[in-house]
Image (cartoon, rainbow, N blue to C red; front, side, top):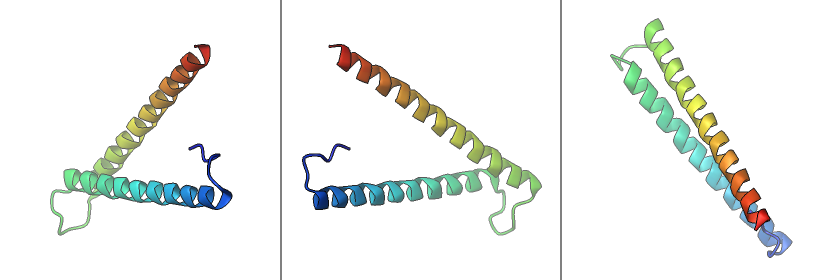
Length: 89
């Protein structure tokens, strides 16, 4: 975020707001992921996970992380391409 048009105090405040929002979004995403994977893999929520269920949760989370990394990579590639196109105009 370009905060050059703001004063130092305003810029700091904006950065803090963005950081809080990012943390809130991350926490919400993490909680949702854990709940989804746990619910998908756990046959009986009243007992601890057995080895197979634990493996299922780990695979579920791993798939999600790999997918998120790939989406982030594609976003960065597209952003770089767009930036290059804008610079060439």
